[in-house]
Amino acid sequence: MIIKNGKVALPGKDELSPVDIRVVDGKIAELGEDLTGDDEIIEARGMIVLPGGIDPHVHFDDPGFTDREDFYHGSCCSASGGITTVIDMPCTSIPPVTDLDNLREKLGVIEKKAVIDFGLFGGISPQSMAGGYPDNFRELSELVLGFKTYFISVMEFFSALNHFQFRGVLEKAKELGAIILLHAEDLSYVNAATDYYMKRGKAPIDYYRSRPEAAEVLAVANAVELAEEVGGDLHIVHVSTARAAEIIASSSVTCETEPHYLQFDIDDFIRLGSPLKTTPPVKKPGNKERLWQYLSDGRINFVASDHAPCPASGKETASIWTDYAGFPGSGTLLPYLFSEGYMKGRLSLRRLVEVASENAARRYGLYPRKGAIEVGTDGDLVLIDPDRTWTVEGEKFLSKGHITPFEGMELKGRVIRTIVRGTTVYDADRGIRVEGGYGRFLTGP
Image (cartoon, rainbow, N blue to C red; front, top):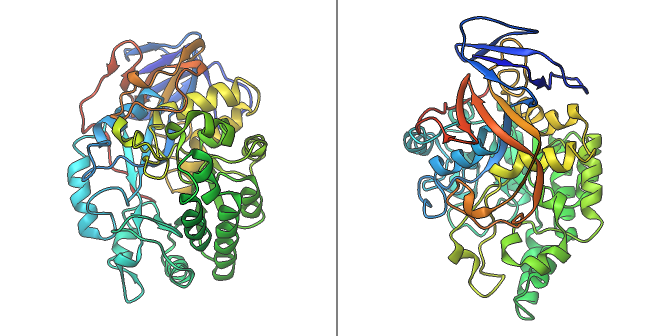
């Protein structure tokens, strides 16, 4: 395969490069001008060619919750938005990925469905800990890309760690060279505030008040202190509060944010209601502008979707307390960053590549196999027409979920083709071009 006449985002460059790309046996074999040969030719004139996007935070709910999503529909949705690699969370499948047997059971189901490459996170909860540490921790750490934990959780089979347990996990993970991921909201604050505000209303503002900025800041400050003391390798997911990002940036801890925290605030939550409900919720006006700044200057490391759809009935319970928290986002992750970040000048070309692909690949041990366009890397590429403007329509999502807070938003830059290891997996005119099972399971270095 030769991708010809495109403008290519090469590593570390702030300007697009007019080079052709030759992919042989799934790997980038050559970069240069006017490449020729008997290869399949992909005409990319007028297109911007980026390294395939990486979405390092999805809930594809498979097996166990496939009424909400499954790995086929989830990975198709990702591919339609230029994502070539996802990393699936351990907690929203049955059984959860908390030991080696559970991982093998999950893998046996999902590897037949994925249309793009994928990795898995393991999970650590009180239910999975034996003698203070997870069963098969060492063996599992050789297959997963990190371990997800919670400071607050409503999942009966995957509950939260207390601070003492969390410290022990950081210590053990340090021995193994493993990364710990954390959902950081303060348990005592949220539980007390929820009891209080549930008695006073069932609107979005009541839900926000139960999980405000302070709940995240308290949890992040405690987690950072423990990680710094122990020397553990900690990554905090879905940071929604600018002050929390500042605390993280002053430490060795890393973090990610999500498109909805960059786009929406509490006024939007009041207006839109449950389609915008997530945990943590969006925050006060002024917060999102600071998050954009921190994403641009490097204080926030990268962006993930937290893709977590549900049927329409899950968003229509007549109370914000029982409406499902989450929505499909993997298919709009890269288009949003391209449109609202790069095209509007909030992100340089180099920073776009970093936050959409390269930095997640580096963080989870997939770089340079993933996350860059250079000789020797996987032929994972996305072709974007920067002149195409399109409107987000949830009903057209390839996910099982179709309710999105981005409904009706115009984005500039349309994904025309998504290529994984030299094979077109998605074409804007023809849809998904491979069968389930094309995607490969990725482990760390």
